[in-house]
Image (tube, rainbow, N blue to C red; front, side):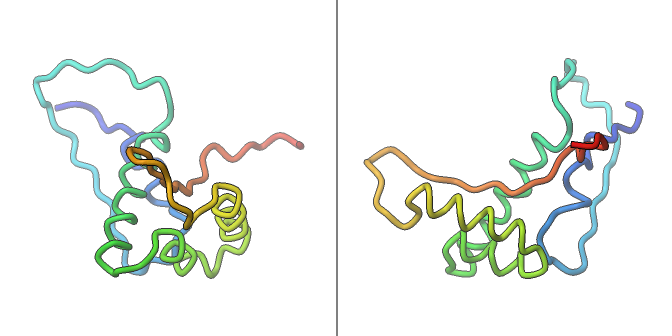
Length: 116
């Protein structure tokens, strides 16, 4: 069996969204498929997985993805302000040319401990 890998949970246990009753688990397995090192931290791939799931929840709720996220960020005013600014600058709600789309990701990774 492969040894535990902390990158499997990075970015999942500290999501900014107010979602009650979260449970994250990791089960180490041997897949038989040789893999190389991922040249980044776990936040990079887990943000894709978790935010894609948030998109699915918004769609099932019949809500706009940005509005859905803002509802989950009520206790995170800085995150909400950044999302609102990004949506405004990106022209959220305006039609895009055929074959183009917009997406949102909200994550925090590698909080620096330096004084800047």
